[in-house]
Amino acid sequence: MRLEILPVPGIGDVTEGDDLAALIATAAPWLRDGDVLVVTSKVVSKAEGRLVDVPADGPERLAARDEVLAGETARVVATRGTTRIVQTHHGFVMASAGIDASNVDKTRLVLLPKDPDASARALRATLRERYDLDVAVIVSDTMGRPWRNGLTDVALGVAGMPAIRDHRGEIDPYGNELQLTQMAVVDELAAAGELIKGKCDQVPVAVIRGYLGETRDDDEGAAALVRDASLDLFSLGTAEARAAGLREAATLADGPGPTPADPAAVDRAIAAVAGVVAPGTVFTHVTDDEVRAGLVATVPGWPARATGLVLGAPPAPVDAPDLVRFGADLQRLRTALAAEAVPSALLPPPPGSTASAALAV
Image (cartoon, rainbow, N blue to C red; front, side):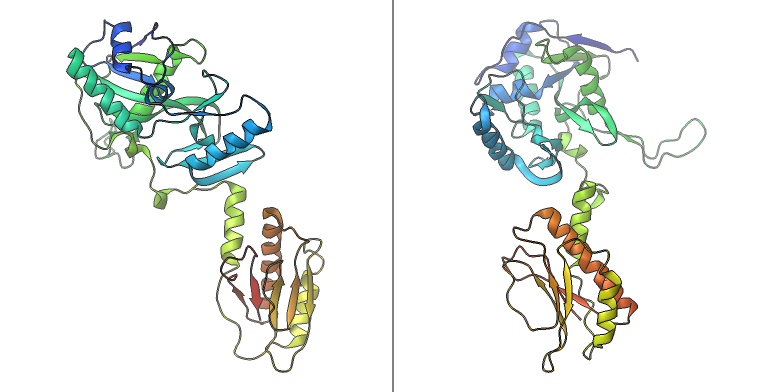
């Protein structure tokens, strides 16, 4: 196989309502059947009007950008400082939901195409119907990668070819049957196109020649590249996964014992963790002849409960790190109680509460 990667210069600035097929066909009259067009998603978004107005600078711009980001976010994956890694409504996991402020007026932000696969199919269909060109189309954008520095282009949408080359069931030269190998060929082609498009050269389209023998419509498009949530082993950042685990652990219901706990055993458990809990967290054991001993999280907004073993919460307002530390302290106490043979159950917070949890022993 011999591949050529060809730039398509001369397209110029794309604005809302522009006929992208006409711009490409005019700038590249040398296109052939079987070529693969790699089109930067930004020009697709501009032509489709996926732009929002924001202030040019200052805190108002940051606030407007945060509001736009929230609207494009289906799920927050990880947060570090001002960086937000989120899952978009398309299913892509990207920094800032792919919102872009480069190569556009300072008072505007560019969003990803609403349906990149549909955009690729529409561009392919127009080039075929109007210009009698049978080409594949990849709509690409830049992404970072977990555990790797640097960015690379990937495919957000594709038409005219499958997104994945499936080698499963094939036999390698040593006689081994391939079990898992599925190559994301459209990502590889998108990255190849980026080598000549660049970020500042105003070349939003590249042509890859020699890869396809013939085009083939595939209804699944680049959506085939989005990993199903049930197969995603890294669906959250490390800190977010830990916080989620502590929140879930705080609602485990393995049940209190059938009889009130021995106060001396509870006191020993409290003493065992007193030196390692976070500052501001206090465990106190109180006695009530009529009510089984219970552990209550006195977080702001938590309703009054029976006296028993009381856990003092961090000072208000309680932020996310405080709740994580609070959950960790609950788990330390549960472990100490279990060592004293005192069963326990963490109770879910009341509806609408932002508190962590309460523990009954």
